[in-house]
Every structure is written in C-alpha cells, then in structure tokens.
Amino acid sequence: MNYLVFPRVRVQAANMLSASFLMGGPPVFAAYGLGEALCFHLGGGAKVTGMALIHHNREALGQSFYGVFSPQQRRAAAFTFGKSANGSDYSSKNPHALSLQPVACAHLRVSIIWELEQVAGVMEAREFLHRARLSGGLVTGHGEIVLEDSLTSAFARVGNGYAVMDRRDLLENKNNKNKNQAELLVEALGMQPAAEGNDTWLSAACLGYAAITPFEHRGGVRCGYTHAFAEPLVGMVQYRSLRQRRKEADAKKNLQSPAWEEETLWRPVWLDDRRGAFVLRQEQTEPEDM
Image (cartoon, rainbow, N blue to C red; front, side, top):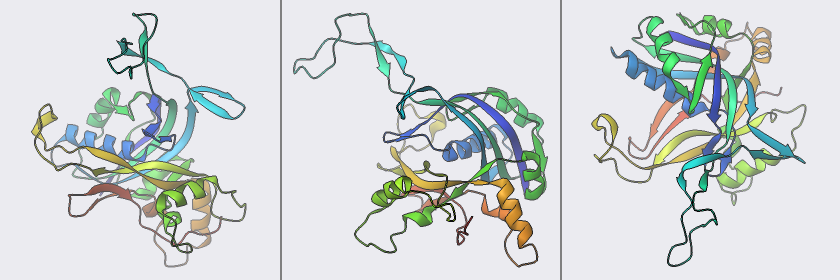
C-alpha cells in the first residue's frame, strides 16, 4: 500500500451543513470523496482503500449571541416571487429582492492521509488539489504533499492534531432497549463529559448515504453512471489527540496490539449487497479511559 499525505490543508468556506438537521462536525465523508475524485483524476486503477482525517482548526463563519450561533447567510440567485394561488409562497414588498440560501460555512485546516492502491507520483496530486474543493470549500494552501510507503511515516508528516475516530459504540443500546439510535445520539452529545472517562470531544458527522430510490440511469447524470437519490447517514465521532495516542502506544509498545495508526483509517463498506447504504467505518476496538 501507498499512503498519500495532504498535510495542513487550508479550506475556505467549507460546508458545515452536513444534513438538514446537522450543522458542524468533521467532514469525514467529504474527505473520502475527495480521495475518490483524486483517483478518478489519476486513472490507472488508483483506488482508495482507507482514509484518515486529522483536525487542526475550524473557524465557523457567523456570530454568537449568548451562546447561540447564527451562521452567515448568502443571497440566492432567484428573486422572491409573489404568493401563489393558495397563498403558501413567501412574498416581499420589493419585487427585486433576492431570496436567501440556507447555508452554514467554516474555514478549515485539516490533514488527510489516503491509503491507495496503484497510485502514481505526487505531481498529479498537486495539480489536482489546486483545482479541488473539500466539502464545497476552496483549497487555498497546504503543506508538502508526499507519498509514503508506511502509515507511521505518513503520520510523522502530519505532526500533531486530532484524529477523527469512530464512536458508533455509543449508539449501541446496551441498557435501555426502548431507545433508538437517534435518541442515543442526542443523549451522548448532550451529556456532561467526565474528565476521567472517554466521552470528551464528541461530535456528530455524516458517515455515509442510504439510497431511497433504485439505482438506474437518469437524465443529467455525469459520465452515464447509474443514479439513486439518497439521504445522509449521521454517526458519532470523537476527536482524539495524536500526542495522546502516541503516548498510549509507547506505554504498551511491548504488548501484542494493532498499531494505533491503523485504527484511525476509515474504510468504505457497502451494506445490503450494494443496494442499501454506503458507509465509512473504522475497526472497532474497546475504547480506553483517557
């Protein structure tokens, strides 16, 4: 395997509205999608088999009043029209007023490591990144893009930061069988973190999509691929310090355990034999106290 490292990527005005009910969270699936777009650009059978996302900084675009965040809004390209016959449409006294486009954006700084098969050199990757977008945001800068032959060397290029980890174990209903996963998600996000526990820096994030229509050929689809309408699948993630992970690894380096770098890789999984949902998952291990 080869590991392509995009270190310290600066992204301007990335989308934070991952779903109609979710604002914020790390762009896990968007980062994986950027790798798929890169492989399509490179050609030659290049394939993404894993991806690690490391968070460095996020600056949400908006204002906060008394702890309530209000994202910046943008004008849409359409005018506000008069009311329809049943009076259901919004109308403005100004016939030339532009409507608003619901949006939530942030400036990001992240590092991405892709595990790739049959990838070429890094020159094409640099050219691709100059025109690429991450989560709809414009890439305005990055560190030196490198291709490493080991995951340990790839993480050494990143330095410090916060790896985005899979915490789907928090959505497993072990005690109260009457709670569904949506209730467990809201409960976990709202609970008071314990300093001695492993429940700090939790977040919700888009980790996949579920098809709500059959896959078929439709007009307007790029490259003639089969198409299906889909809904986002939201899961639980956690920001884990790379410095802390290295300390934990040094403490048990004489024990037979998988490398911590392997645990950070999100891997694509098709559920229901490629007809239901496409999700990203990490190899689940028993979380340790921090």
